[in-house]
Image 1 (cartoon, rainbow, N blue to C red):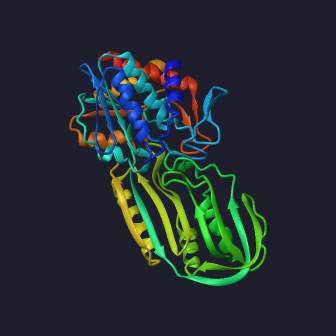
Image 2: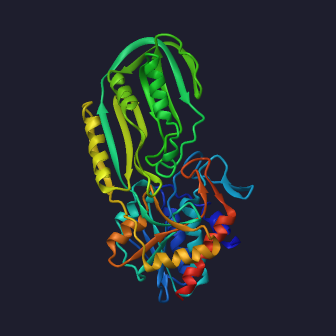
Image 3: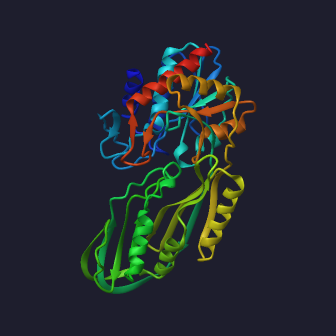
Length: 423
């Protein structure tokens, strides 16, 4: 489906980082109108477009996680994949939006819901004000083309703040950076236990008796931290270690944190990553991402994102995480809590699976350890049947993100066949 790829490339020229989606919103509104759709936008930026008498609503989010040089996204094709030069690609969820753009052009009876700011707490889905015409919703925000997703994890953000006094200390100052880690999506990729740049740097500083001048680690609350750096006074030159580079800035007087030891203790003692595994679904069940850690100018800030496919475990990890950081005297709050979408089949999911199997006999049902908007939207609209599909996307939320071109074609055919069945 070269048209879908063309839409995606055009789409990617417009900045659409989370919280910075205004230009993309205007573009999609005008595009939908040019296809003959009635269009409305709610107060949180969700775009509802429809024409005719639709029976199926397609849904994707139009913000992206901007890594590297994004929002500048320079797309190229290599060995059957779409990639981006020195940035995240935005195939999550730009490919879904591109499929919807082509569907609006092709079909007379079509409904599309473009949601805003999904990547920063499912803001659009949580704040949805639109009523849908259809009773069937097909979300296009999945990343494996053999799976029909019928369940997802719930999640909660935890924010930690702590003020500190600064002390003047003289010593040899070093600039340290962590490099060479993959990062990745904090739900999809966390089962493989990728190394955390934050944990690595905090451990190195502690083991070498460093005193913190500043510390900055992590990129986004839903990305496994890939980069970290710090300015530190060491009593003696540290030994070299893999993935860590440092250089001396000479002897000088610096403002060091009076809470530096506590900050390092928080980071080193906290259990980042997988907490429990669901052997029946063969997915991570409960996890937490120590996503961002900063110390500078008298303030400590830490951000974490917990996920679970079980409501009880989600509430437990929220409570335990807050108690952990409260024990250090920090201010702690939880926000953006949403419940898991418990797996169940429906007449619509059976139709989607049947069509998927005609293009890939290995297709099967799946539940994902990540947040999907259709779980939230389905809870808001009584009687709505939901499921989620998408093309093969690898390493989303990172500069290594890539999308399989043949897979885009397969999923596009599935989507168009399903919509066509309801014309």
